[in-house]
Length: 145
Image 1 (cartoon, rainbow, N blue to C red):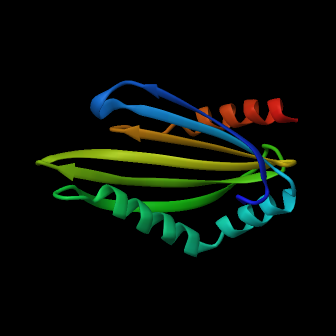
Image 2 (cartoon, rainbow, N blue to C red; image 1 turned 120 degrees about the vertical axis):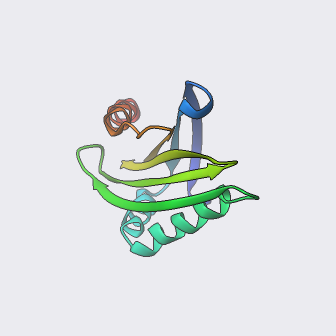
């Protein structure tokens, strides 16, 4: 994807603080060849990709005395936005110093023409709001068409 990219922009938003934080990272990348994006989306449906996300997430969260339990990574196809997309939903519980906090991460990727739209929602101590992600992605898709 790096060699095919022609432009990229990113925005970050955050609500709350401490154990009740919700953050959103939105990114738009333009590519020369939309087939690159189609291939990337097709690969996401492969269960090995979910396993890779799970391993990467575990290695980032479990440092020192921090533990991660009940980690689940699921992929679902995301229809109705652009030319197709998908969502990875990652949930688990992080514990450190005797405190357990549920975490939820939703990674969304949508292809619309030559644009890759990604939106990641991270919620600590609550579930991610999938409707917020879908509404945001629809708005993003409308702006790049």
